[in-house]
Length: 164
Image 1: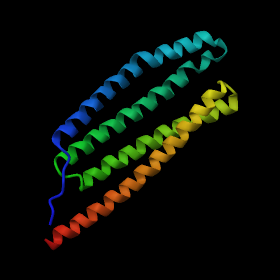
Image 2: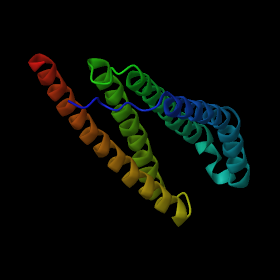
Image 3: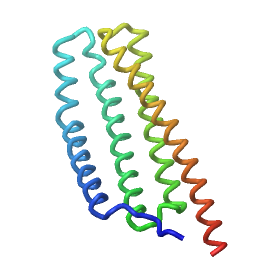
Image 4: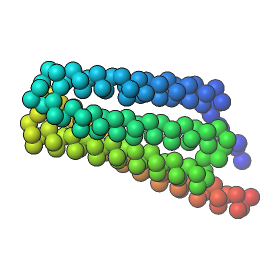
């Protein structure tokens, strides 16, 4: 029987390094960029200034969901590196990723609904929020399929281990 191929440790190291970079960028966005953008928005459109804090909170929550998903992906990469991806721990991390994407998608749907009802932003904002809703829904469904594949692969691996 052929030996299963595992990703080269350097690939996992590069991926984790890129994820650290993403987390640093996400932190910078959360700490500096989002508050600055919301302040500029409130100054440029004083009639909507009352939405500054609620929208800032929603955007910060979106970033928290992104950060949590990155951490879950990090943990999955660690499981891959230790050849234990076919374990109950992997299901927890995949479930967290699904939850994060679903959470962020629900927030985007809320923003879209509010923008459609209140007619707040330009049409490009509605288009962008609609695209993000479709992408979030597609990613959630994709991760559900991937969790199913993980379950099938785990079951097959357990059966093979029993036979061997």
